[in-house]
Image (cartoon, rainbow, N blue to C red; front, side, top):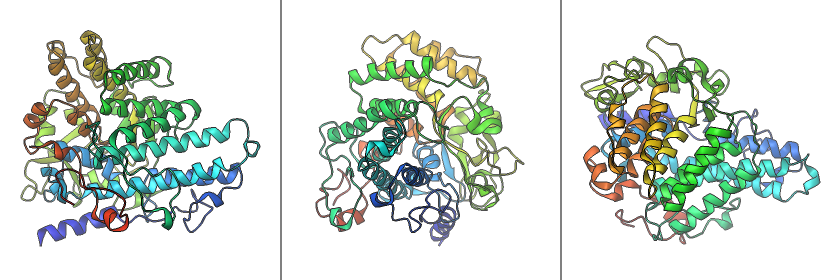
Length: 477
């Protein structure tokens, strides 16, 4: 009965996926987003806004719901917990995990929406658009499509095995019922498709856009994530180059005080490359991001003892982790997670803001690439890591300074990812999985096999798509 009640609470929190509202998806009002809705630049922009609506996962209460992005990675790492009873996600029980199916659904909704834009805009003559806007819209859409497919790759495919046949079911056209049956691609083909989308976005997406819309800079940062996961030596070289370009030439700068991003500046921060802007007045709604973390709410998401220990003697521990939650009987050793809202704070547009890409991650991805490169300059990587730590108020860098092997410095880089980026977009989980497997098992004893690095494809896919292929290794058919 306790487990049933727990998922009733979760269902109330998550809501259901529905069509876009009038503000962002005017044609078509009934959410049939397809190429026929696009007849000129204005309608193309409207349907593109609908794709951004899918990215933000706006639910039926007109609320951006990024819970699966923020919480899942932290749970898989053992850093975040559901505050009123442990979930299978927290134990790395992937076959029964609750967040993965949400990620599957949300990602394909995003991919479908972006394909509608790409198909519709591509069918129009160039002179239907002003200047380079046609390719810019396609570039933004292909960035979003790459984001959706990459989520699917790292959650539902054997992404770390280049020779695996079990990659992503790539959707490159707007889906009709007659087009549903399709085989999944190989892992290598999946990476190639995602990277081709990102290369187009880097070449064509706008250089300047509000940071809740895509830019060529956001495409560069996402490409760094993708290349680090693919993990070839040439990939590390390119990650280093992309990171250098973003840091030296991009319109971004690290905040002098990390706390200011979450407590003061939000999307106005010079560090935010790509974020999620909350819907108007969503802070007034009960089941929302702020109240999910806010002290005293029954649906609170909490920090674990592991996360508290990680921040011991770190200045971030004073504002990211609060007191013990009152639900110790259900979730022992859990603490208020205060990254998004302080004790006693009121929900606001600021506390409702989410973050997909920040410059801190770019620094740390570049550091990881340097460490992993043959003959990489460990001192250069240390400098990048310490720069990020310094912006969070850290003054003792001895652990980084003393890490003089590849594995030791990779571990220190990972610790800073956890301290800086937990609860944002699953970055902490991706970074953990790229460590040597022996280290992963030591850090996370509930992981005993690399099949726990991915999740089973939902049964419904096999029921509706007879051409899909086989289930992921380790999960049966």
